[in-house]
Image (cartoon, rainbow, N blue to C red; front, side, top):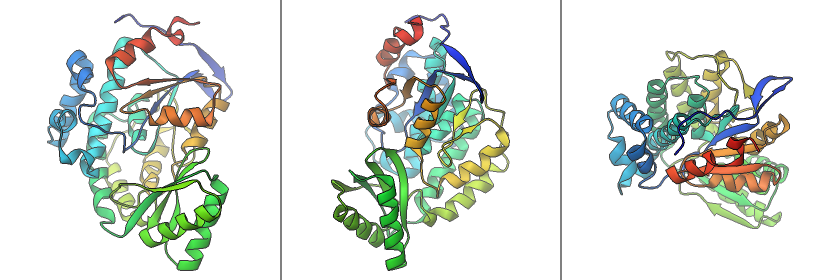
Length: 331
């Protein structure tokens, strides 16, 4: 693989300096045994990320990520495993010379974006993500649910959730705006099931229960958000070196003082992923590189816009492909 540093195309906008290429990082649910192993074996930068994460958390991240085990699908372990893998991949990509002008991450992936924007030091990211996973795992141990709604647009799903809440007095709301025709609802299990039924009546093609341990991104996780906010109080932050977009508002964050409140609020707020991508495209981004396990975000991109280039990096071979691509050569 080439090791000299390629400069990606950049441009100026009214909001400040951005590049046309964006890094995007996936969230919980894309994990699999063996993720990141070839980066660990071939990149010193990636190995260093795993070393720091294991040292900070007291967990064996190599065993957690690289071997078949039950912990990998448990939220308190999934989150630290995913974020370690994503940051290891990103560090390897940076070591190879890959750069971008802005970044974003879906839910948990926002912490990888914070790393890529150099807002938070790696030890702090690992410590906070480890506690985030524990708080979210324990916040609502039973009676919550999440369900993907396919084939119905956001305003219709929002209306259904509001009507069900008023009818039942039970919480249900939109958790994720993933892409056109794909949303996720969250809340109390009975309310989510009733909302899914109502969505089908309004024309949803499918409503698919998600195998999750709680009603994430709902008001039911307010306790976890409060605890995370306290954990964040002692963390030192730097000004973003490149803008990153927050899930809460789908707007660029350019100042460090806004980050802590947004991260706490994110736990019980909708993930505005579609809106975030649309904002980046409106600001001029024309190439998106998904860094992390799976190809979930690349799939969403195909539904959001067919006018931009999309790459995925989850193996060293993927990284080599990107490094040989037109975005590097400047075509």
